[in-house]
Length: 400
View 1 (spheres, helix red, strand yellow):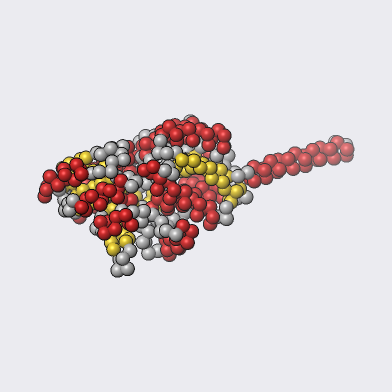
View 2 (cartoon, one colour):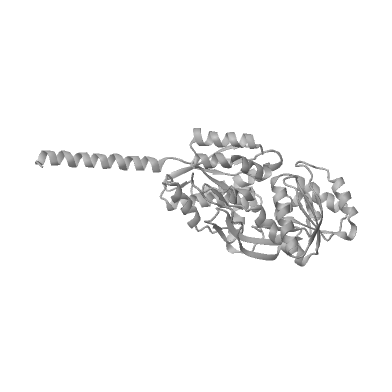
């Protein structure tokens, strides 16, 4: 090759390299967009706002960016409505071109958006909805759960209740997907321990007056030892207060969210003695949790609950994965593997994403509400179930 041609060839190669580098740099500099599919109003609003608070704290701790990409949240109220949520997902993907989705709060909403998430090949980090199906028969490589499966919370409680509290239980739960799955998981665990379910009641979502429920429970008399209940949102306050007013004797048990930092002020002494199960205890005496609680109180002037931690850990999982990939999230398989490989120092304790189904592996804590000498309320840990994973084997991951 003559010197002139050689020089031109080298120049073209250098220019091409510069263009390629420029394209990579431009891509790395693009905003990292996360679309939230959360309820900010109505019965589930308290949870959606808490998840968002957790996410914002994680973003703040990261300095607002990761791998050179500014973190931008795109948010709108899904109104706890499956149709609204589905429209949001489609708009986020098509118009906003989000890199990740976080949410939703409710199990039936999660089911409604699953197919669109999978079809669009957009990662969804479920920060609350426990719908078992999403990491079982409806699992997808694009669905990662950072909260809990409905089984994960309630089957261990069933085992605990039958071994420690009595052999006869009644179930009261809101009549929708999560209520049915949670109640079923509790019943399975309770029966495995030799217990019997003596009564079931399924009030409609949004029920505020539980007089008829209390009347039926009172009619069971001494024939029941335990009442497991799950009434989401503000309804749980009505249920627990009315239970106390009815002076019913069976031990109240259920998800820890029945009586936690969200509702202590409204429940007051009626919360004392309620036994719960969940993946996070705000009063855990560990350096990591103490630091998290202090940061949360400083930023929001309130203590965190489990749902706050789910939002926080969802955002930290995204940040860790994007950092591992140096900002490039175009390879979907690599993104999923990065989230599975992620090491998240969670305030909840052990935290790992299960490669087989995308569900979180974590400790489950059985707790009892106590009143401290200073008059504040908190949880005493009665038992810890270590590294609980969903046992179902129906998940068959397929990228298409």
